[in-house]
Structure formats: C-alpha cells, structure tokens
Length: 129
Image (cartoon, rainbow, N blue to C red; front, side, top):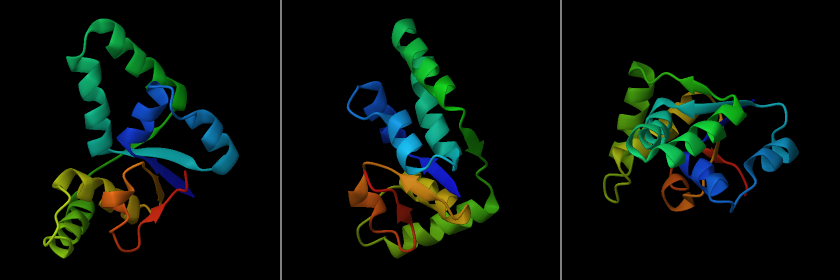
C-alpha cells in the first residue's frame, strides 16, 4: 500500500507538533511513502526561498524520510480536472485537486491535516491522525 504525504504533515513535524516518523512506524510501517509533484514543489520552495538555516532544516527533515515523488502526468491532470469540476460550487484550489488526484490514481491513503478540503473528495482515503 502507498501513503501520500501532504505538505502540512511535514510542516507539523518540522514545528514539533506531530511526530511523523513515530506515526508512520505505528500506523503504516510497510507502506511506500510518496509525495505528489505539487507537494514536492511546495516543500522545495522553502529550500530555495528561505534563509539558509531554515532551508537546511527543511532539507534535513526531507532526507530523513526517503520519500519518492510521483509524476504528475495526463492521467493525474485529468483526474484533478474532474475533481475541480465536481467541487466547483465550493472550490478548493487546483493544487489540492492535484494532490488528491495523484493519491487517488495511486490508490493511496493521504496523510493530511487539511480535512476541510480533502474530506470532500469522493473516494479519497484519509489517514487518521
């Protein structure tokens, strides 16, 4: 099984409010950990835009996980467009649609603290935190 990580799970870990490695070891010890390309972009922004000490901290945290990055291609883009269309009366943004679509196409569970957005996506499994 696959576990996709949303950027906010990493941020909560960096801030000391969530023990991500312990949670993974307890709840998903045999799962392959993955980021969507959009989440990776969001996380790497910090490594390029922040002051060096904070950027190095982000890179250290990411290196500890050994997470693969999933490609965002036509299949994921089509799924994200369908999600965005289904939620058009109360949109959540294309970025979250891309994260959800990548997890859905991978048949993965998504670890996120943003249940307000992701909880509205049909068929998306959210990890319990």
